[in-house]
Length: 511
Ligand code: GAP
View 1: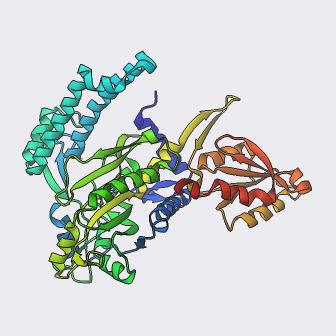
View 2: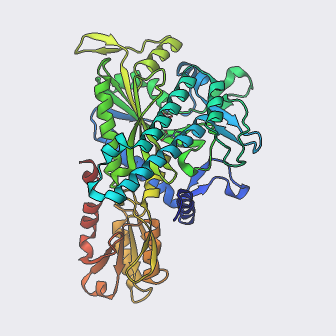
């Protein structure tokens, strides 16, 4: 049976072979946790961004988008708490010399226990079929209960240590759980230390600490510091949102997880400014909306789940993640946070500028509360890519690898294929392509046999292939093949645009 690691390896190699993702600086042996998107990957990424922007900005009259700079005044990161507290607890294994995030080691240990629970549940389902009462089993089975207690105890101990900044306690927890280094197998650990994740550089020509600036670790602060500019110039009334897509940088200590945890990545964030006291209503609203956005893509709903934060950041009064079942298990895909008025109040304090909003309906001014939705673009890419990757055995016994990408996100929407390279078929095919290319990203493909060309387009994830044959020259009809069903339909070439428009209508997802 293929392991999760095997699956991830296959996806990484497929992504490279078909121009989706390359290791950065590959010819120089690569740069760790940094990746480049190739000719297909950059299209998929762009389509995900468009889908997000459409759902968040175009579909909401009270949400607008901005594009703020990566470099910002360094005091912003003092105010936001990133200079003092944007740390990961790190621990080194003395034998392998490998560095780990202490919280990740503990999380992985918990995940192993959780998998034992799931194994017991799966056994029950297999044994009792439809008669199996999963809910009852989870709440009464002694094995499940014992393992759940273990998980709760570990979580509680870890939370307690982090809240009281007891790093020695975190080390003791790792020792008590007998966690071993995956590389050396040894339990010979250093003390746990805090490590700031921000990259810094100097602005201007003089190297001086006064000139130190940071590469933003999140796009959100660019929204906070612009909130009054946007509110005033856009005449926005609370509740309203500001959305942004952009790069963020974190000096992550990473295990091999491909584009899941990168040092340079992109976020799609939205801050929703609300009346104090109304934040929980909007928090629930955005939880529901964001899950809907993900599941509308047609990926199996059971790949998603909410995870409420055990440990709330000091500025939040509610927070959860939407987790996705990645090849390496359920992990955070998106964060939804009720951030209170913390950020705006901090910026008032550090900048000395008033950031109050005057509410004409209440006839009073206040600092708005903020509900944030923050999804990683690269993680969304990995979620979509990994769940779309399928190896299939066809009826004739042959195999195909197909990327069953949501059609609306596929890099190439339609491949145009003349059956042969003669008899005027390429010319007719190009005529059709020239007509379609204004509306759809098309690829012209005349090399190899039709079967091979289909396999190539399946591997890229192209949802439709149009073949131009001798009949096309007689009656202007073409065949259109569906990637997933592999069924072909003969239609008049004048009907192609309408058919593709119907199949690729974003209304079906967001309507
Ligand atoms: N403004 C809130 C914020 O930045 P976060 O949970 O730290 O919250 C939000 O990040 C999202 O950004 C995550 O859910 C994840 O999808 C993505 N993300 C965070 N760090 C990442 C990394 N190193 N590589 C790729 N994506 C990352």
